[in-house]
Image (cartoon, rainbow, N blue to C red; front, side):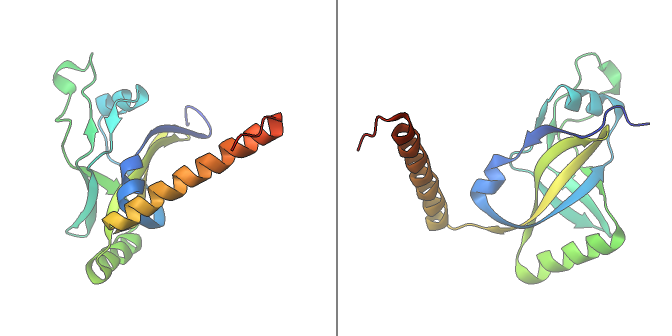
Length: 160
């Protein structure tokens, strides 16, 4: 019986959105120990600089840091260990072929609880060049300026 209904976001990999164009997203489960789940409930996870890799027909999550649980003593595992992702074999084969043929990579974009179970959102990503990153930053700044101007105009104090 699940503990709670719905989705509760634990962590989001904003750096992945900055460094990559995310083309497709997939949801998958992950094999964890009990103390790791307790650390995730406390929000102690870092997705930065992490990626996914296919080995022997299984997908693994590499580089995710889940901090040790304070009361976990001897049951705590290595915080940087690779963790097995739970996906259907056909999805793994499809993703493996896309990464090998098209030069794409697999990055975790989100970690969340869904109906009491830990899920990861994996993105099939294409790397951005430096000029793409600058364009993205410029677009965000322009949108922010437009929103600010619209807000001021609505309040009646339009400033140029």
